[in-house]
Amino acid sequence: MLVEKLRSLQTPLEVSPQSNYCLGVLPRSQPHPIRQMLDAELYCTLNSDDPPMFSTNLTHEYLTLATQGFDWKELWQLNLNTLEATFLSEAEKAEYRTRFNDWYKA
Image (tube, rainbow, N blue to C red; front, side, top):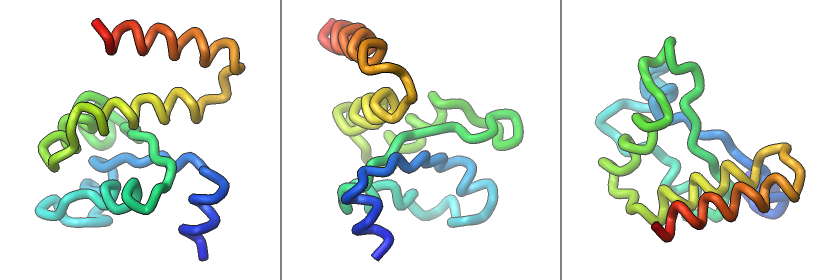
């Protein structure tokens, strides 16, 4: 099954809620299914897709999920997932992890 394969490989899934709403993939009256994806232990990152086309930015994407009940810890984890999904070297990721954690603690 696809979900099991994605979970076992921890394939990063770039999720762009506003894009999905604007394209009519799901109605705006419905919460985005990223919650179910995370509950299924899929590896999701939050993205803004094409900001000019969808009149959004990354801040708006985070606010969208916050209004749908995501708490700070969940939103922060999406941020960390994005760092881990990059093609940066492990040394660069470690540097950013330190910076992120320092900011988070402050």
